[in-house]
Length: 109
Image (cartoon, rainbow, N blue to C red):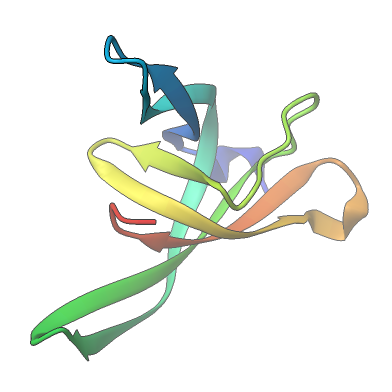
């Protein structure tokens, strides 16, 4: 991979519990890292569920390997107003140079 292909500025976010004033907690997202990445659509399909048509698009997101930051499948990636739920993370060739992330576009986990 050429570094010039990493042209999109993305933010990796993790879900975090925050306390509320009623003694409980709520869930929110906190930024873990902001990095340059490449986003490529891999496939797409439409699924008819719960009486409506729902589209799913799978993307491959490539970024530099993040030293000290473990990116996992319970995180998401934010690019502009688009959200990508991380489904798989691969350390390319186990060389600690690039991460290939398979993600599904959409707001719900």
